[in-house]
Length: 261
Ligand code: NI
Image (cartoon, rainbow, N blue to C red; front, top):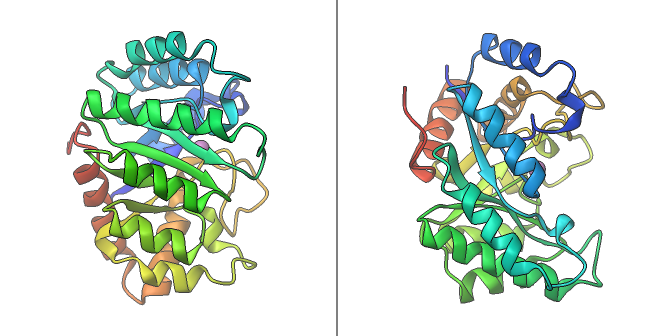
């Protein structure tokens, strides 16, 4: 079986001490491809470094809504720097980018401007995007309608929100599920997973955060994506093989630069 973790952070400092070991373990556990996601300039560079060392690891670069600066003064410089990263051959998407009104509602306009500028960057290089959205359903959808992404993208760790999932599917985006679908207190997880046809589902860990059941509370590693694939299979009443195969193909379809080997 082939497993893909479409969004993780082996660039997080929690892995600084034993990264090579963790990656070896991940590979031995049968994880076929990993996408390591950036969230600011530094983490994007680190992600490129890691993906340059390992064939089966790919990278995104972007500035997340929680990492935007306090004002728009340096936006042109930041975008220029990001563009120098975006052309790297291991960069397969722009992300994670989007809106987060859970942590900050004071800087909505700054978040929106960075989101839009990074959509334009994705379109310039014909790349898809990885979206981070939290408590910002309407604004996120509105921006995607007004600034269409040519190559589409995925909603990373998609909030289990009916309205968001409905609109995201209508816009042609993929829904990426993380450990939250395995949590016992995610009461509507089964309903949401069943709203999404298998050919639009992607799986991820968002490692080192959000470890799925039965690993909840530990440092999350990419091999735990198997628990998420299993949970989706349980909800849809199909085999884990079928979910693994289709979600693998979905990732290859969406991120055109990932090799099938
Ligand atoms: Ni993330």
